[in-house]
Image 1 (cartoon, helix red, strand yellow):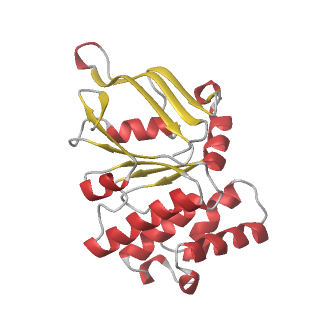
Image 2: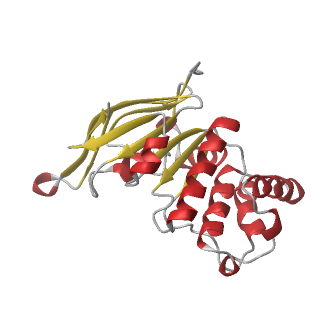
Length: 229
C-alpha cells in the first residue's frame, strides 16, 4: 500500500493518575505512528488504558508526559480554546454509547459539530444531509433518536463524527451495544469510509472480528503497545 505521510505521531507517551502511594501508571512510554488512510485496532483486557490512549490521541485528555503531533503540530502546545477548535475540525469520535441528543432528529444531531464549528445553518444542513445519505439514512433524516433502531442510532453517531470531513476517526468500542448483524454493518461502514473517504481510523475494541478487519492490530498490556503478528 502506498501510504501518505504520517497523520498522527506519538512519542514517549505516559499517563498516570494520582500521586505518591496512590499513583497509578496507565501508559508507560508508548510510541505510535498513524499513516494517512491507515486503519489500526487496539485490543487488550479491560482496564489496561485503551480508552485513555484514545482520549489522548483525540486531545480529550492531556498526557502526563510525551508528545502527540498531528501532521507535525504538537497539539498539546495549544491552549484549551485552540485545542477544542482543532479537535472539532480535525478529529471524529465514535463511542460505545452514541451520545445523541434524544430531543433532536438524526439530521439535527448530525448538524451539531458543523454549527459548533461556526458553519452557517444552510451549509451545516447540507453537510449533514450528504453524510447521512452516505451512511444509508437519507430516509430517516427527520426521525428522532427514539424512533431509530440501535444500529441506526450508531450510524447517526458515525455520520456526526464525519460531518466536518475529519482526517482521523477514533472509535471506542463502537459496536459494543449492538447485535451481531448491526455490528457487522457498522464495521463494514467504517472500513468503507476509511478506504473511500481516506479517513485514518483507530478502533479500540474487544471484538476480534472487527480488529481483524483493520490493517494493523496492536495489543495493549502493562501500559505498552505491541504489534500482533
